[in-house]
Image (cartoon, rainbow, N blue to C red; front, side):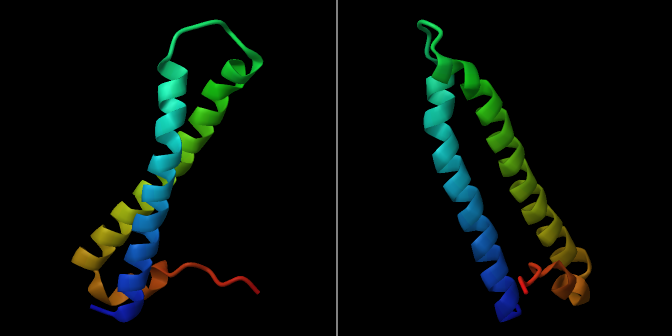
Length: 84
């Protein structure tokens, strides 16, 4: 397997793990009952945005795995764009 592909997989896995770790306390906070505070009002909106971000990373990981399995020569097309 190409070294750049291994690094890309590791980067995507790290991003997913970081986002999962960030979301878990927010999920717990949203589930807890209690009085409605301004923070609690914004929690579902923030949680939804972060869940969507996490979903995007998971889709990217799935696309990477599919491409590597079925089209091994074209995995270089999935590299992250460089910032100029």
